[in-house]
Image (tube, rainbow, N blue to C red):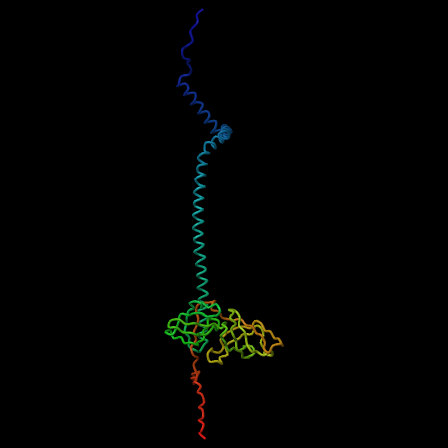
Length: 299
């Protein structure tokens, strides 16, 4: 019995036959999918199976993109924060400067109104600093003898009287405030027309009326203005407001406390008021002469 040896290489379909078979299979699948949509469930199943693999394959790129976006966003947020902080600081500074300019403009308009109300000539000046003596209430202004300032002239701000020029230098002047213990201002009660003398107490926010009888009609809230009887302060300028009235029969006079309406700390511009027109010059004080002694006759 003859046996044929096995072939050295297994033989199958030729490449051309395989091409024809796969081509026919592709045509059949195309026709089936195009006409009858038979492959749609298969594509969905394959998509479901391949989706995790696609996510895993795209994970490194997505992670790298997110990390880059995080650092870029963080840097951008820091830059935006710094820029907004600087902008906020600039806006706050501008707002404060605007508010300060508005207040200064308001005070300047008040000074102009005060100048129009006063018949006497006036000079504008600026407060430089307060005196160093802690027991006095004095300020220095930037006008002196060369600027036309004279000692004894009253000084007012946009609200009312603040003091009097007490010492004049060539370029500066010293103003003693009405709250100083050495200052006396003749005042008039607007409500009742009563005259009084207001004295400083040394306290920045406190004045007092001296030698007021117990029966005098003064009440808290009364407005006090300059009476003008001293020839120094023009009449009608606001000075103070009565805050407290104490009447004790154990004393001869009432204790009346007041608060000044004007304050040098409320602004930097003041008016130095000149001499009131129409007032005669003060007479020159003559030195007192001792009476001549009579000579005794010889006896």
